[in-house]
Image (tube, rainbow, N blue to C red; front, side):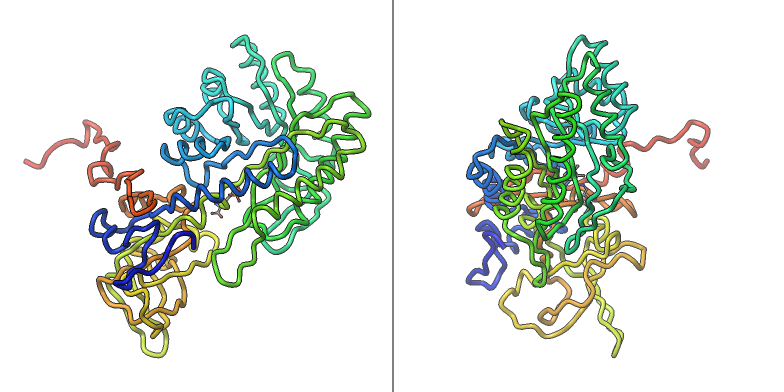
Length: 438
Ligand code: LLP
């Protein structure tokens, strides 16, 4: 992946940094982010949209991996930002991210979050439901402002990696259904609110999608809806946001398309389906998360114990696990791994990589072929840039790992490793149980 190679010592090197040295300097588990690859992926989106000739915004879905440094990097690459909570918004604002390019998502934004975003001067809200239309309009009115909104609609397309399903009525907690008329009602309602500026529509059909058909069908349905709305109510949409979900290659067998192919399929579909009713085509926004950061991330672990059950399986335990990568336990996600300190050694055994949590389900990889693994070896699990640090927990009071950015031989900490003091930092002992043993 990216800028990773094997150096003369047989060590895995990422962004010009020797992983054995990274371990010595920062310890393990360690999240390593290949900065050049994040920039490359960002540029692939921007270039592909430029080639389409349409107006666009590429909003990085910060839920995939949100830190101050990542927000700065996204800004440098000319991306916009999708946030879904006060925490992500706060991170973006602290990073000095241009607030007009931040889009606020979520199916249950609190009044406090809405106020915070309005105070900051947020670029737009992606409105999810009827209660939010009223709430947002009321808060905007109190603040004496008019806020930009997109309405999240569910086009009745659901995509899961290899297949997409076209459903009549979508059973989803998100958005207004196009099929049952609620999207139509939402448009009329939003357009009539004094303090909302209805910019357009939003649709997100799933994540880790490998094919373009689902996106094309979503565009077709959103366009058909927009055309109907225009004919019947005169409301036109300036922006159509098609969400994220572009797949990446975790394993050899995975067959995602290139970023440029996803973008071309979407922009071509927009040109085809909006042309009849829209002389000026809407601006197209997308929200890639995984495909910006996923393959740029590697997690480095130190091997500790192992347990060989002859004829059954060999478990090799590392110093992290479901606390830094819950995806195998949650979704049965598959990952590849290599021995980072002996990257040239040939494969000798099939082992299963276990975490250190007190839970049988805490397995990172079942059956991976590796050279003979010994205590003290360094294991690198690839493609951990998205939804790993972002979904990390303190289960078993395990400290969250550090994150480093690597680039051209330089490494920089972007998130410090949690300390034992951090673990108890928010704990309090009520007075009535504070008695010390006498
Ligand atoms: N936009 C919206 C409205 C979304 O809900 C999501 C992801 C994205 C954009 C970004 O999707 P991406 O390009 O990253 O696929 N935790 C799960 C993934 C959940 C995705 C949720 N929404 C995982 O680890 O696979």
